Image 1 (cartoon, rainbow, N blue to C red):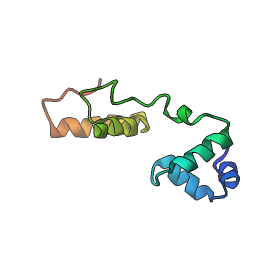
Image 2 (tube, helix red, strand yellow):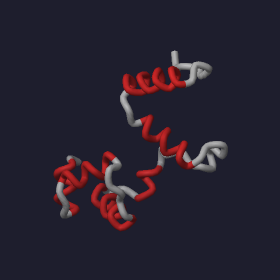
Image 3 (tube, rainbow, N blue to C red):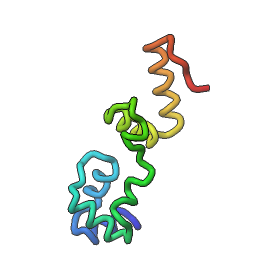
Image 4 (cartoon, one colour):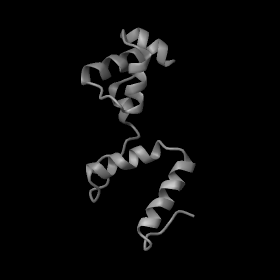
Length: 96
C-alpha cells in the first residue's frame, strides 16, 4: 500500500505517514491500531523482528534503539559510520 493510500484511509496527509515511517513523529497506540487494521495486520506484526531487551540483557534500551536505527541505514552508510567510530577508537575492530 502506498503512503498516499494509507494516509487517505487514516484521514491524514502522506507527509504525516512519512514522518511516522522515518521515526520523526511518534505513533500513539490508537493510531498504531488504526494503521494495523488498515493494513490487515495485528499490531504485533510491527514488532516481530525487533530485538527485545530480554534477548540482550547486557544492552540498554538506548543500545537496542541504536542497533535498530543502524539496521535501517544503507550498507555504505553503515561502513562509513564504522570507519568513523574506528577512527575515534583505534583499539576497536572494524568490519571487513
